[in-house]
Structures are given as structure tokens and as C-alpha cells.
Length: 285
Image 1: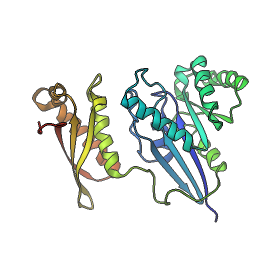
Image 2: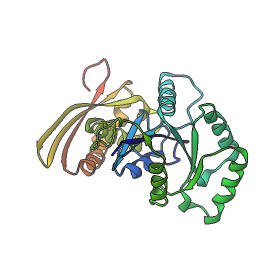
Image 3: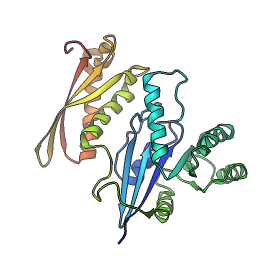
Image 4: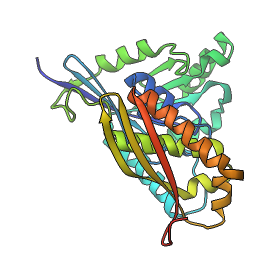
């Protein structure tokens, strides 16, 4: 049977539900989910292999970058456009609860420059009136040539089956990029580092989580059901030390426990996680 493929970029504003959707489609936690802006920094790919079909999803950083030009924003923009350029189809995810036509028009006009088919997905349909989405679809459809519209709830798994069926029906004959047992372009080490970064994002406020790195030091399988992981939390400013450690070490302990629980769930085994706080270009602290 000849192989078929389709490459899809999932785009939208922060908190539109992109990471939740890709995790739901792939049925694996390949991208972290957090309410804070720009939690997806890397271009993460989720892969579905069904019979002779391969679907590749690019989970891109959110649209709403800061106006300030800095290295982080440049990286986010580069990853966003890399995902768009690689894809055959653009899946534009809109938060149904926070719909804004002028904002949608602005983004669609920008996307039309790429000259690729666009699917518009109204997400979080469980949080709005059932009949409120159709008028929104009609007003967009009058203005733009959109390939198709879908209404879903990524969190509640509503409408996902229909969306996946549509995507499978639109695959084309081509060589697969990934093997049939792969679900992401990222390995277990990347995903476990992301779990700890996600815990920091959830538990530490303001700008601090965006100025740290989580680096793996040890990833060792003790046996079939246990893994030992050591990670370094790298900070770039000494004033972050007390905040991340917390009173009597409570904050960093909570970060470790929350991350350990997430990793155990993802890897389906017992995890022994050890974290160490490091100031870059200085001695261990």
C-alpha cells in the first residue's frame, strides 16, 4: 500500500488550545499545556500513523508576541514561520469564548500571504451557546476563501474524530518523514525537561519562568518500571534564587514533586527526580 502524508501547522493565540489539541489528536502528551503566554517555545511535532497515512502536526508558538524585539521573540517568530512554511495545511484555532472579528481578519490576511489552504477551528465550543458559532463562521466565510470550518472542544474531546477523519481524507501520496512507531520529533529527555519547565511556569510568577532553562544531567533506567532523572534548573540572575527555592525550600520541592508526578504519568513508570539550581557562569548554588 502506497504511503500518504499531510503536514499541518496548528496556529492561534496563546491559550486558544493548540497544545491541548495536538496532544488529543496524537493521543500522547507531546506538548506542555499551561495558561501562561508562549509556553510552547520550540517547534514541536506530533505524529499520527494510521494504516498508510501519516499526519504531522506542528505545534507553533502563540501569535501574541511582545512588541519588543529580543532574542526570545525572534526565536518564537522563527519557529512559528518554520512550522507554517513546512506545512501543507494551516489549522487556525480560535478560542470561541474570546472571538474578535477584527483580530481574526488581521491574522487571516497575514496567513493568506503564504498561499496555503486554511482550516478554521472554533475551539472550546463547550463554553459558549450552541448556536453562537454558526454566525461567526458565516461572517468569516463572506470575507475569506476558507477551506473548511470545524467546531470542537479539544479539552472535552468533542469534534476531534470528525476533524481527524477530514485530515486523513486529505493526505497525498508521498514518502513518510517518520517511522510508524514515532509520535513526536522530541525524545523522552526533552519531554521530561518540559514537565519541569511547566511546573516552574505554574508555580513561579512574573518574568522568572521565561528566564530559566531546564537541562538534563542524568536519564537512567534502573529497571523496566523505574527511572532515575537528574535535571539542572539554570537561572541567569542571582535574585531568582530565593524565589525559586522558596521559604525552607518549599517552592523547589513543590516544583520537583509536581514534575515527578507528570513524568511518571507520561512514561507510565516510577520516577525518581532530582533537581539542582544552577546560576549560569557561576558555581553551583
